[in-house]
Image (cartoon, rainbow, N blue to C red; front, side, top):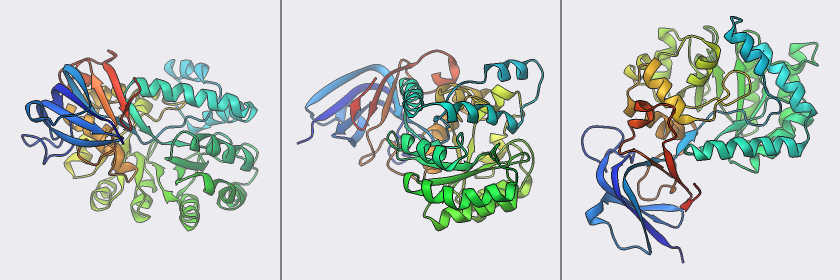
Length: 391
């Protein structure tokens, strides 16, 4: 028999369920609130004075509670770092996709134990900052053996695993066409059993539109659903391809035409924005305001990787999105929770409503707005994952 817990004396509860809250915010805010957890699920939300009796009681002390962050884009199975590359870039050298090869070499040389230790280190770091669901990718092996082992390691820690054999053309490959054949053939066969998603870096210096289409359609035929790195460094076909193939998300979305925005607004594909990448490369910021005003569903994620966005902090990305991408604090928090869930095609996370998974973050502040108002301050003071307090 499961044990029930009420968290009461919550100054502001973010439910992301507008029918539960007051006002017109999509966050479904409830003030002077409580939330009841029964087992691994949310059983009730509402005003503290109306909370039902439970087995256990936690006093939030007048702090804010919101859904656990959903990080729908990361690259956490890797070895080494690229400090020298970052230092050079901050000294004036521009970012290109070629730096990935440095991480490929280090990852191939690492043992399974080293890769898993690195993964769990950054997962623990993200959890302390309120992330309760994360997606992660392969993409730093680029051989059949190294890609499949990356996915096996990742699958021990999350169900949201993405096959990214098409990150760049392998340094060992003399012929890009032959490498695409490997990615869509033998490598896909080895990797598909360990993944839910398939991804491709559709960009100059990586894979063009025709190659990206071949990769994603082959993955769909194996039961993997598409997502795509699209329009990060330049205008290109990635976003249009994502919508055409009903990809769950088009990620980066920095360089968009009006037709790209219209396509995203008319389809189910989520535009996942990754401000850590722009911060770490001094690149142009995505125009979140343009997307939101057009009715596009937007997610915020970290893109945690050792080259272009070495941060596991969703709160940091929320602050960047508010400061530099035209988002309001409410929009940024929604995008980092419910938006991330939409990018993973999930409705059991990213919200606090009866039946949802009991993933909660407690802030040392009375409002979620403090995530942008006090950037850099470690505000997360409690985390529940699947109903159990883990921080």
